[in-house]
Amino acid sequence: MTTSAMDWSDAQNILCVRLDNMGDVLMTTPAIRAIKAARAQRHLTLMASASGAVLRPHLAGVDDLIVYDAAWVKNDSSGNEADRAIIDTLAARQFDAAVIFTVFSQSALPAALMCHLAGIPRILAHARENPYRLLNPWVRDTEPQSGIRHEVQRQLDLVAAVGMACSNTRLSFKTCEADRLALRTILRRHGVDAPGGWIVAHCGATAESRRYGAAGFARALSLLQQQGRTVLLTGTEAERGLIQTIRGRCAPGLAVVDLAGCLSLGQFACLIEDADLLISNNTGPVHIAAAVQTPVVDLYALTNPQHTPWQVPHRLLSHDVPCKYCYRSVCPQGDNACLNGVAPEAVARAACELLEETACTL
Image (cartoon, rainbow, N blue to C red; front, side, top):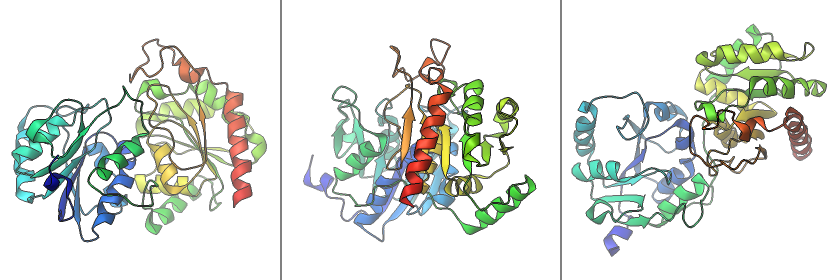
């Protein structure tokens, strides 16, 4: 590494590249904060997928956004016109530097090549292979051979390689009063008048391998009836059938409300922020809860180890299996045993413990 490659103190216009999903962008927010903190007047542009770009109104420190669905990341894009055009887009912005954030199973080099062709002089990323002139500096990727870090720590370590750090390493998600007021209106239409104190259960997930079974969810939620709290079921419009199935299997006396497909992202975050607890599969809402400091019972599929709840009270529930850390979106065994092996009683017990513990700290 040359001295100039290590010295980013004069970098004013920086591109932050995170091309996978919403949860991944959220787990990058502490590193983005560190970049901004190193020089307050920096202009930060986030280049994100359409999935990650929905976070833009809720991201502190991000000044601009470029939406790009890359050919080397799973998405619905096709052809190569957007891939050609993005180089011109990046060149026109005249960035001083770029930081490419990836999980260890992804390669940063395709994005690095685009940044290089766009004339960005300093490009920072993890890489396993020698990138030669593509990266300056090159941060050697030692994962997974030398152990696997939490995803948040991985990105903090990356920017620390060029001297950027800050004391606040929590995830970040900005909620707003307009979303909270709109949420109140929606909740009243569903018969919920309380200003908070509910339990949110997020029962879906993008990857099939990260979904706890409907019967298990319904049984676990029914066991929480004695808590006397309203349970709010959330999910996407596409998950409405799943949510209706779970609601239909819950104990008759449980106060349960179906909100699938009813909320914007901002309203959903306010719902979690005002909750006493989130029970969820390991997906984006877990990271929203961490950002707004709502305790989480995380039904954690053992597909990968590095995306656990970050700096928030939580319980991590999984069932150990020989095939763990498969990195698959569909269970190769077809039974999601690392999740469905978790007893509903264990989910309810974890929820009660967290509710009791966090109530004592208020």
